[in-house]
Image 1 (cartoon, rainbow, N blue to C red):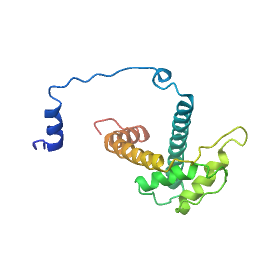
Image 2: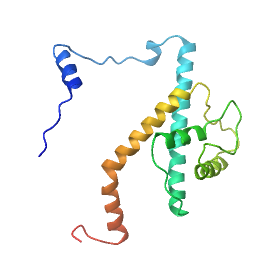
Image 3: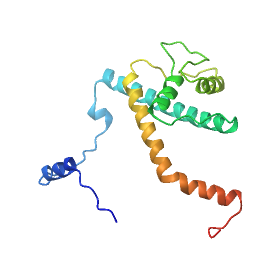
Image 4: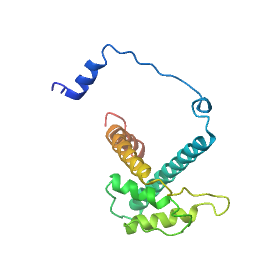
Length: 172
């Protein structure tokens, strides 16, 4: 069995924090921030980023399924791919478009299909306004979550699928 490597930065941080106590303070949002302008702006940003993430994950799922059903080569699941999904779902400068141009023709087709399924009335798509850095961070988080999911869950779920599909027992 291999020995676990010790990281010097973690060891230094642990040693520095050895005699310190940490605690978590729970406070209501309205008590913490009582300036309505700042509070409303932060809430607007959080809502917008959550909407971008929700729709981008839907696009990723639709695109992967489309690639599998139409025998299209699967994309490399990296930060660039997830960033393209994020930029594909946002409204650019108040203009709601039905098309897309994210630099990948297969993903563009998926985005066109996705946007055609959006509600036509009373729907506000997420906006790109002041979201560049947040979308980069969101794409990085999506990439990390995807890789963690593949490492932790894929083999178990694939084996479960094979057993159900071909009616196999664990022993076989």
